[in-house]
Image (tube, rainbow over all chains, first blue to last red; front, side, top):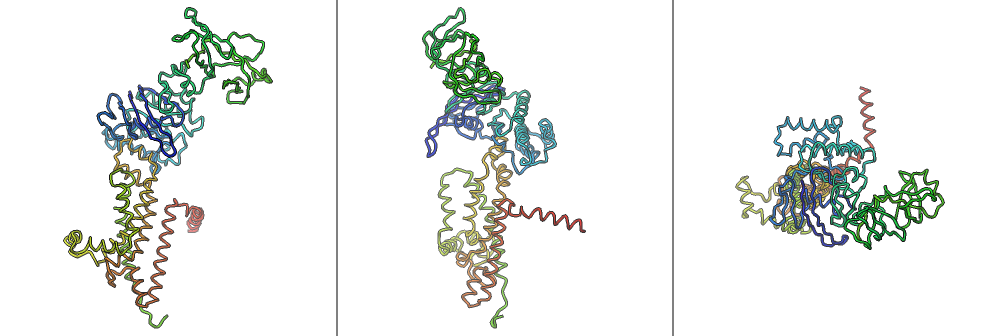
Amino acid sequence: MINARLIKRFSPGRESAAFELNVHLEAPAGITVLFGPSGAGKSLTLNCIAGFAKPDEGRVLVNDEIYFDAASGVDIPPQRRRCGYIFQDQALFPHMTVRENLLFAASVADHTRLSGLQRRRRVNELLENFQLSDLAARKPAQLSGGQKQRAALARTLVADPRILLLDEPARGLDRPLREAFYQVLKDTRQRLKVPILLVTHDVEECLELADFICLIADGRFLQCGARNQVLEHPASVEAARTLGIFNILPAEITALDPGRNYSKLKVFDQHIEGPYLPGHLLGDHGFICIRESETFVIPNRSKESSNAIELRLLAAEPSARGMRLRLQHDVSVTLPATDYESIRGQTHVRIEIPAAAVWFVPR
Amino acid sequence: MAPNAQAIDWFPLWLSLRVAALATLLVLLLGTFTAFILSHKEFRGKNLLDSLITLPLVLPPTVLGYYLLVALGRSSPLGQFYETVTGQPLVFTWQAAVVAAFLHSAPIYIKAARAVLEGVDYRYQWAAFSLGASEWRTFWQVTLPLARRGLISLATLAFARSLGDFGVTIMVAGNIPGRTQTLSVAIYDAVESGNGQMARVLVLIISIVALLLLWCAGSVSSNDKFLAPYRGLLRRYRAVSVSGA
């Protein structure tokens, strides 16, 4: 369990604005994804936990052991924190072979108190587990991106880390390698049962790996919670925007009925229905957030649908999953290429919003 | 051959090579350490230390020589310490020329080595730290091997520069033929005494040696790229010579 309360301030520099990191992170065993745009303070958070950056205030606890406490002046050096840190470009030592990289890790991890033979055995075991045995004699420069990533992970595991910190580990890997690496990471999560903190700004990666999600923007957490909680119920319109998978529309609550689990919302002078919205009042203004994957185009104009709004079509572009339509008010929706034929030439399209998918956040 | 030609005395060349080799060794040991401190440590007075290291580059050699004479002379604590340990005074011996050459080449080496060490990607060092490696171990097993090429190239430059010191050497080691007369001092001496042939030969030698060293330094630091175009040719030559044999 990681429990980190971090405050770190940066005064404005010649090319940088003032920045303040102010977060409270709790990460149990499993993968916690720190998700946010570049410059939000994700890597800085990792560095503070690993001991490479010193917070101005706060404390870092890992499994109830104090790594850092500004108030009492405790600051354990990175060497004794046992954080397995995987850097963006893996940072395998380029002058050593894969085996030497792992042996280095085994020989400097003095807490394991292994004999030379045991070390060698442990290194062989990990090389085997990560399918690196045949590559053990190669230098990092002779490995592919995916192999490097596996080697880097194996190297950190040699030292038996208490937590794993991964800074955009899949960056630069193409899709098949990415998927393979995700699988390796999931296996590691199964085997290791330690908190794994993963930094990314790739939403697919976040959805694929996260058990828990912390949304971070501009040095602050917008929302932290279990994966589905964050994905289905963004806490604020900023949280929804940071995730970037929502269509966000301004709305006003015009009817609320807890007995029927029913609400009615006015969206651009059109009306849609949703579930009862606890904690909100009639007449509240705010936004509805609907995941893009739950927003549908009604292909046939004549077909009636109770829960639909009509929006002007701005552009249609082919995408990986069909045609992606850009509509007014920043709404986008993807539909299969075959369905696109039926609405081709229309200036307006009708968007169906399933009532169950409606999520309201106050302004 | 000119009628007044004299046999060329090779002693200055050997002395210079020996002095430069020892000075380079000193530079490698002390200079690398200092460069590491400057590049990886934060401490009070770091800028002052940096300025002190740069000072020999801007002071006239006579001033440096004077300082050394005062600091290492027979009445100074350092000079007396040296005399008790080795049984002979330091000034006006060839060992003093080593100190002079060291002073001549160390500042440039330290400044450049600092840049080389700072240029090693910090992530490799962080990776070593996070695995549990001490700073000392990280320096020896990660930072130094990664900086090796740059440092070797700099050491070659330091050697070339050690060969060339004149001012400080003549102040602290003097100009004793056969004992402390290094190459650059011998050239000065030859010109002064009208021995043009001797001067020409020594000038040519020192120029060629310096050029060779610079070429070596360049090809080491350019990561073997210098030899890369010829590698295929070399391989083919080797293959031919093996199959021919």
